Image (cartoon, rainbow over all chains, first blue to last red; front, side, top):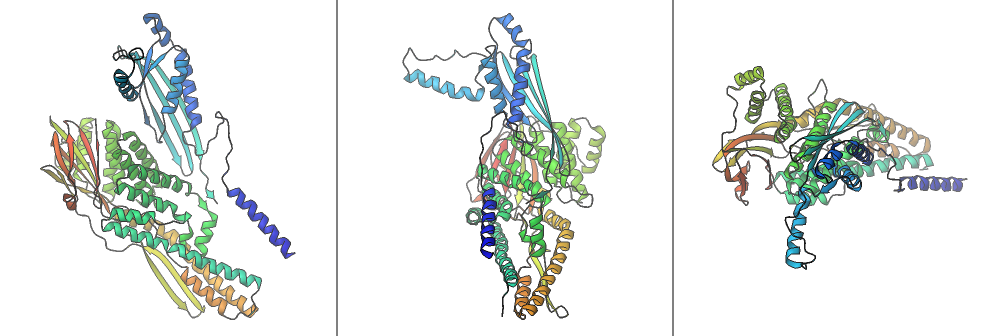
Length: 199
Length: 433
């Protein structure tokens, strides 16, 4: 009887210890998993999808092509994170860049922090590359528009309950005359309830 | 003496409680490291802290201290990482653990996970903001200040100012000011002033300047006149060709908690009664005004927050809960000794088991003296306008004269924020573009 009880206890302990171990499961990138209520990949994806759809459906692109005869060149300026969280804005900006470039209707030029490295490489080519493969300086494509924006949040909290409101505003500004040709906005609202008890 | 399975189990419980007691000594070890820091050896203190293997329940306290020591040693990214981990952990630990409540009621308070006091949680945000600022990341610092404001609202209590920090509001105002968000800057500076008024503290000249400048600049005429009358001077704006230095000076190391314990033999009960609660020493070193020198230009930094007072406010706010748990624990331990005596009489174990339980109840009665004890003793601030140029800079620390001189190059209309700590040779500078 005692032996059976001991065996049972050992077995139960083993099961309990297994439950404490790390487990990893692959999930689809489109699966919505909210763990803490903070900004996550789903929010980033929702924002980029909505912004892309909106940006491409507005007349600023066709107006520019009609007037200038080539797709507009866009540069990404500052997208400021003015929210309550450390948000990596580069993910949805990169998503937008990819979708807009792949649509064939917009060209993107390298942002200011990327250009330095490219110019260094061009200087290096000037010294070390064959004449046929060398890229000359002064041939960069100037941007026609700059994409700027910001993420703002409002947090309302009472005890363990919290409402998180995110507002993402992006603006496309003409480099020629500072005219704002497109304003994109996405709002996300979350109700987060934190647990009162833990193990 | 026959040892039944029930008695054996109880004995194991008592021995386990005594063994767990070993972990309570860890808190004294960390307090000693803070003492080392007081002596100014930041590197040694960091090495000593890294040599500690903190139990899981002290992990947040360990990360807070480690983050602070890394900051003082100039490892800003390492500090940010540890402090963010501490913040995340402390947020998770805010939920109540039934297991820990039982442990605290039966053995002692050190069996609870360390979650930090209200002021420590807010100070954590402030240190993170300093970290981001020192790394040139204004938006990162802004995030921390926004979180700090939410946190201060969360921990606000109508009967206590525990967790309300004027230095955090000032820091918020400063970050908004650096980001040219004048409205928000004024709101934060106002909060800092109101809080200092509530505490009966004199407003430092730097905060007075901020209030005068922004009420005037934003056209709040009545408010400006009130401040002008109260402070006896006009708003000061930068003259052409001048830049401005704002120095945030953290001085000293906050006192560590000590244990107040009484242990008496109660003849009518036939065993000891022990009560242990944390307390702070009545006396601590008062702040000395830190001298800010930018070349030949000098100003004295003035007190923004006395962290010693904040720590004592926090403990005072926690005392009703600590006292209630201590009394409950005394009752629980009395019951344990009583049962051990009865069990010993029934099983022929005599008074031995009761004696062991009594000794265990005395030895395990230890106050929770854990705290973020590498925090500064006080926080000071100064504003100083200087003509554009390059200057040697020194904030607060006479000993820094022996260290390699640091220079600051300031353009007209540029603002530089200088972050300094009295125990560290590191001096961080953030400059607007």
